[in-house]
Image (cartoon, rainbow, N blue to C red):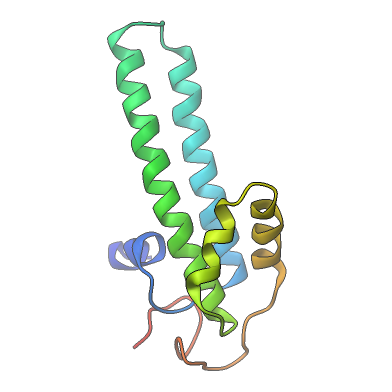
Length: 123
């Protein structure tokens, strides 16, 4: 995977993404958030390290929130739906169900209005 493909996967809104790519990218974001949070909890309270890890956690949180929307939009595009429904990933209690549905619901087998194939930006 090239640098452009990775930036498209986590930051782009055009195109389509498969169930597996959506799940694995979401899992990676969750693991990175957990790692930063874990490191923050290990830092002594009030220390400089604590402040750095807190700042890194908030930065990671903002990046993963943005990336979750981008991934959700592309996943919805894979089965021909508008990306506006991606914000359901942030509604408590609905978010877990929405994530599971996006991981399990099959995409369109061929081209649709959002792209020719999955795991690629719209050409």
